[in-house]
Image (tube, rainbow, N blue to C red; front, side, top):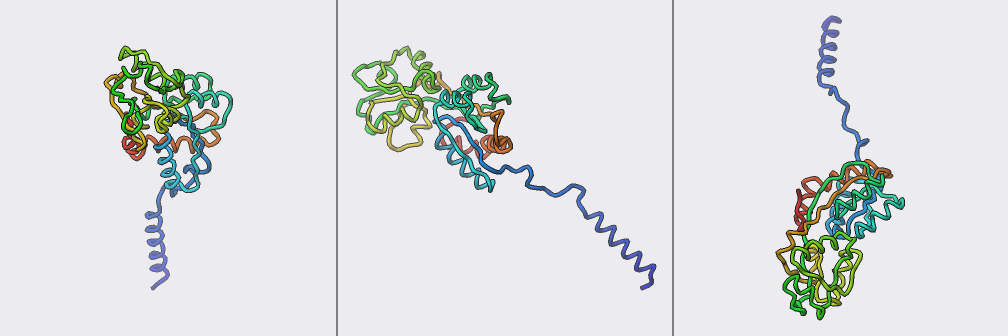
Length: 256
């Protein structure tokens, strides 16, 4: 091969290599979430969010999702008092709006789920509870969420729609505390979310028509001062993804 032919072959090889080189840089891990992500979430999200948190960690090695579950109003107070968090998922738009008005959240929240109330009774329904009218019977032991808690506000709407004035024996600060009263047989009936009844085999559920008058919406948003803003956005995206929606539906929530 002459020098001229050798040069021509080399030039052709360089041309093929240049054409096959991608014009955009390869994907990097710079935009992937890492580190700890702290999520403040309504108590009624405990089971489904715990499961989703594990799936998120498996899909994003190097992340750890830490949850703080409680009544939405209690979580809102903690956030306004400066508690560090990355995400707030509330069981009431009004509670999240309260936190947003305080400047703790600046992004527009997104409704990612809806829920309805259901009567919870101990196994076998020893109190023979059949509807909301039984909550006005002082001979029965009744547990409700406190009025400032989202499940309490929803219960108030349901009772108003039914024209019933309840006679509760105890008012609790979150829906899980109410459910515990039923599980332990300390009350004859309580109003909780249908997802709470579905999450346990230790109680039974009784449907009532006024549940449609008390639909609860769940908004989610990143905290403005989130220590892990990238992680917050990634977790919210996961909750709103097809996988997140399927998990929520499977737990008994409605998804928009």
